[in-house]
Amino acid sequence: MKILVCFDPNKKHDNFEGSRLRKTIKGALEIAQIDYTSDVLDDDYDIVHLISYDDFDLQEDAIENNKSVVVSALSCENDNYANYFQFDYKDGQIKNVLSNKAIKFLNNANVVLVPTESAKQLLIRNDITSKIKVVLPGVNISRFDSDHGVEKELFYRYFREDKTKKLVVAIGNYDYLDGISAFINAAKNCPDAIFYFFGQASSALSVKNQIKQLEKNSPKNIHFKDVVHDDIYRSALMNASIFMVPCYHYCGVVSLLEAMAAKCELIIREQEILDGFVADGVNGHVAKFSETLVELCKECLAGKIKSTIPDAYQLAVDASLKHTGERLKSIYEEETKLGFYLRREKND
Image (cartoon, rainbow, N blue to C red; front, side):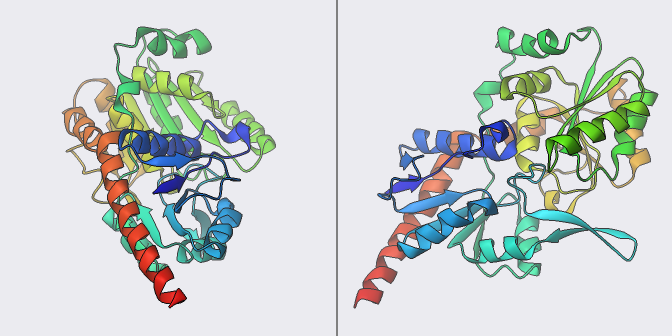
């Protein structure tokens, strides 16, 4: 059994959620001792494991050659090159909408992997008829070990910030900033802390323009940044007291698992895709309104609310590469056997 897992050929996207998920999958396969290739020209594989519907050509090639297709979906929603849902406005309300292209791509898969049961039901309601299995995307716990002193220092060496100040990190998509006011107001209400927002957009110009506009009306202790190198972002998480999801667009579970592994306190906006994954007051703090997010941030920085880090960290441990590899191996083996019987039936 051999799996094709390829990287995004556009190297400038290699630091965001889609690329990190690909690396996680490959790490899980190595631990589970599953043979894999990253070479798209290597046609000696049994299953292709895809992340983005931009991989449509790879999916078509696999189908034409009677290979099985596994797709990981709804784990990288902050990443424009690996997300599935987009924002739409209907009757004055914000809606997360699944595009026709995404629906076609998912329905061409043999099996779709999603991070939560609520994500599975979300796809079913959006006319996805492929087999859907709930599998957390996985996280490399060891990469967030605070004993890695050199790596932990990278954030401060790169951004030259004051180590004595508490750090709040948020992630999002500059194309969908509804709700960003919560992050800005939290910074205004917590002037002794440092706030960093990392994100991506559909174009470099969009990122530049959005950052310029946001920083014009924000306090000095808040910083909006493009995607940074993986090591620097990981260092930011390792130093952060809080990881916040302030916007309404669906959040990437990959980023949440990394924040859990880094032992950040989670403060997130209520989202359907995360229902059952982050439990309010148990392994994070969940709020529907911006005012609540701001208040939670203030109380957390002041040490006035109970920490949910232990339970969140345990969830990350449960999603370690070893567990992910075992789960993927089981799914691959099932699809390989099914594919064999279907091909034999077709030939007969």
